[in-house]
Amino acid sequence: MQENEIISVPLHLNFEKSIKMKKVNIAIFVSGGGTNCENIIRYFKDSAEVYTALVVCNKPNAPALGKALRLGVPTQVVTKDELNDESVMMPLLQQYDIDFIVLAGFLPLVPDFLVEAYARRIINIHPSLLPKYGGKGMWGHHVHEAVKAAGETETGMTVHWVTPVCDGGDIIAQYKVALSPIDTPDDIAAKEHVLEMKYFPLVIEKVLHEVFA
Image 1 (tube, one colour):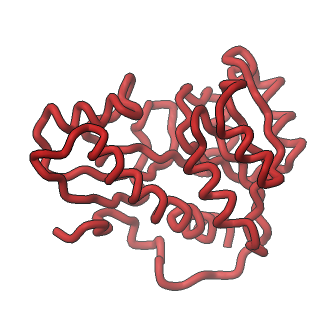
Image 2 (cartoon, one colour):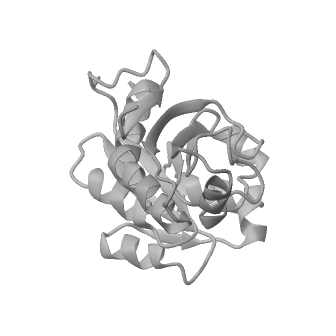
Image 3 (cartoon, one colour):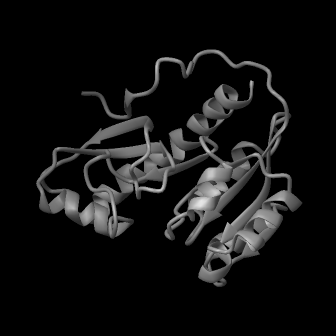
């Protein structure tokens, strides 16, 4: 196995060719530091086809909010009750004409009404090779500690469609990296994060071309 090897991607998702599509407005949902959020915003900053129209966050003090604002992207903090209120979320997304939602380190479960309204138009990134180390409680350092405890020889990232089942949607793409027996959970996290920074925006772009071309 080679590091950063792509190991799963639908046959119809062509990573070699781009097809002209209409302008797509995306919203990024985030909970924490926002490294993926910032990376995605920067990746599409000069795109004629993809516009980051909104960042939604469930934590008012999350560093992601400041990063988005510094890059000129509007932000909105939503409480748990607001997230689960269709009369709040749908008008918010309609206000910014959101076509597609990217979960980039967003911890709450997406409510069913949002999954239905954006069927096959919400994707999530997960820091493991699903179905391993997914589901309730498996996020961030919990995942990497579990990978270490199990003695895994590899780890990776998964991009998948969002469904009402936590981490249960169809897999779009996975990338993996080799692990050493001496790697700590922090080392594992760092290796996996490199994959996210390199590949997540690319996968988003190709998915958008598939959906909206």
